[in-house]
Image (cartoon, rainbow over all chains, first blue to last red; front, side, top):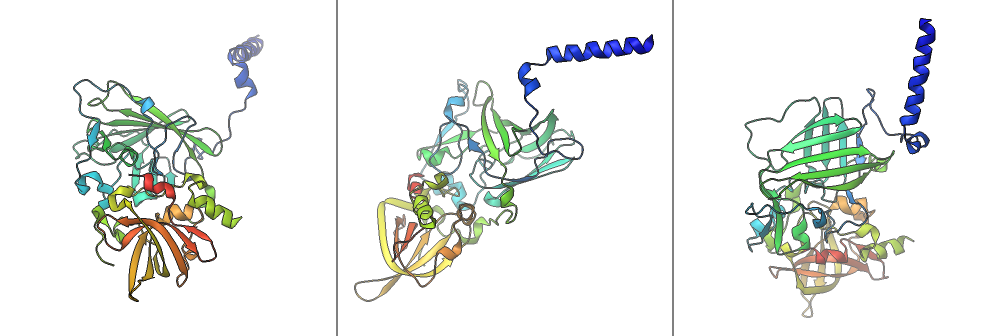
Length: 259
Length: 131
């Protein structure tokens, strides 16, 4: 009798599951994506830079920039989002003096990237400036008592198959490379910037990459933009190229001098 | 086909190639001072943050001037299939670009053309828009 009841319950459960599952999900097999031995999505690999989704506004440099259509309203009386150039090259072109891009501009710089993942860390290396972000995945909280940083303080966690990277403790710096498109102004983030990145394999070769900008000193609410990151396994043979900005930075501030 | 690709690249068609990311064009160069040079390619520095190549130009009075010309970042060029050996030292080349803001014999060399018409792009024309 007990065995009969168990079988009946199992059949009822299966029937309910079938009815509750949308038809599209029944017909569409889950995409086969890289996974680690413990079943987590595996982002280890070499990638192209994040690229725009169709319809997104583009900048003039090879760097990817945020589309102003996505911006939340500016906070009345808040910290300025747009900062004019001053004519001082150290202010207007800090990267021309080998200063860092800072996150999120670094990830959007239009250069190759290599990611290394294990159970406890994701290490995200950018070819541009050989910038490296070390992102703990072991559930630890943000560090406390540190000075603000160009790349902030990231921690990661899993939400199903999505890796969520939460970053705080930024130094005030350029949000993106908008100033290469509009030579009159920067788009700045404040030191209250909080970013949330969401990485999810869309299929075996493309990662959906969404950055949420939560900057309560500037915007009335958080806003987001989705990009796409394409895996480039063919680039692993060469690996990342070296990038030493100081090596041959011949004309900082436009002062080249004689040859 | 290779030649077609190079020409496509020089016009910025290939992969939307816009190769200045380290700094904007306007940080170092003056778009009001276009330059066209013909001379001998003497040296190539395939180094970061941007490649530099040197062209010796003969002046009307018989003297020579060495021009230093900047291109894209090595990594970005190589990701697009452009390698150092495409700039052949000893060759006579025509360079099209813009002079440095400080008026020195430095510039942004957006294209290099050999005497047989082959183009080698060191940075795309679109770069001049990155101000």
